[in-house]
Image (cartoon, rainbow, N blue to C red):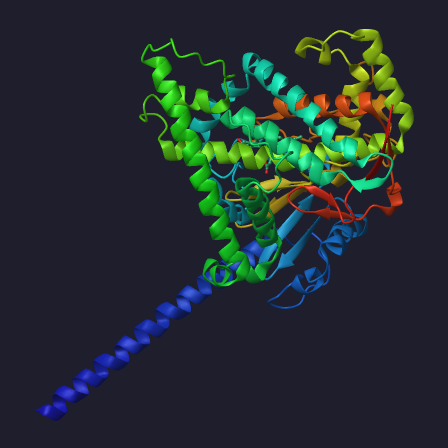
Length: 502
Ligand code: HEM
């Protein structure tokens, strides 16, 4: 009896084993077919010689500077499109308007690449990192925060902070120095005052805890974007960078929360009808968010913190990078400094410049746009593909990551003759109009930069302030530049200028 039972159990057991093996094999077969289809879709996209499993990862184990050079070299070698395998993941590089247009004009392909998750502990799912319904809702809600009334307030802030910028730069005259740290601090002061209504004074006090925390977390997140070894959260947390990241996060949260609480109290006082207490403070973005929050029903404090942090992150490095590269380009081409100043003297003269006036300065605008073409502050724009999309005759499958290289896009000789030459005339109002998506310093389409008007204004004010006070020279020749594509475009040696008082 016991023997019969045992043989039934054994037979049942082996049936179960057969069944499980069948399921496993079918599962593997499905995975194999899916992978085959995936690879078939990408068959026409060239890539550098790749090794099994690791793909091109071995070629990417190089300095960030070499990595940038490789991106340029591969574009020259492979033509209109290429990809790089990082393990089993394809990263597809786009730099022809024919590929950029369908991607950026799509209302479907709006998801940021997987690497953006590294920003989430800091930015939560704010405007930069969110997608789907949440992103649509927030984008619609936040677009009016850059309306012209507020721009007027931001303009005043930019002028005030730029005059502090000048007094800091006066300490560096007649010698070579790196402008980037100065540009970072003025950008941080402007964005902090405009976003939170808080005078940070980073320019006068660079040792401020919050300033240091923002700088540290931004550079650590940047490192995670490119270093696969610290992509896993559990490994990252054990590293020194992981600990510094968490500490910085704590300082940032604590600071922003305090500012929100303070501002909320002031705002409540005002809205409870207590207008006797004078509040001559300028309206900041945070005030608008508090108004829109409808007592927490539309936006919670957490939501507000997400967006304030998002603006701080998206605004400070990009504006600092733009100010630095714009001065670099003008330092290499002093004749355009004179054109900008001549126009300034003719149009504005000795009067105090207004928001309306600044838009009349067409040489200033053309020089700034031309520097954005050559040195785009955000050189790579990344998207994760969740539905197949046709890009230049290739059905790019779901699961791919695509990256627009705007540094290369902006140097396409079909749209920019003598593409490596700084020629602001291209952007004068009577020059031929550029086809859409050929020039995208702020990206384009539904996920373009929400702060572009504000950023343009800040960069204009900062550049004018510097030019009116100093003659600018730039040390590195164009062929000596050593580009690095961090989240922003960096020169490995910094951006070294010499300022001579006018
Ligand atoms: C010169 C300075 C700036 C440049 C060159 C710049 C460039 C860009 C680019 C290229 C994107 C698209 C990124 C992507 O799709 O991956 C972007 C998005 C964004 N930018 Fe800017 N930006 C600048 C300044 C600012 C400022 C000052 C703010 C806020 C105050 C800001 C807020 C944002 C936000 C919130 C997004 C995400 C928008 C969305 O996904 O809906 N940016 N920016």
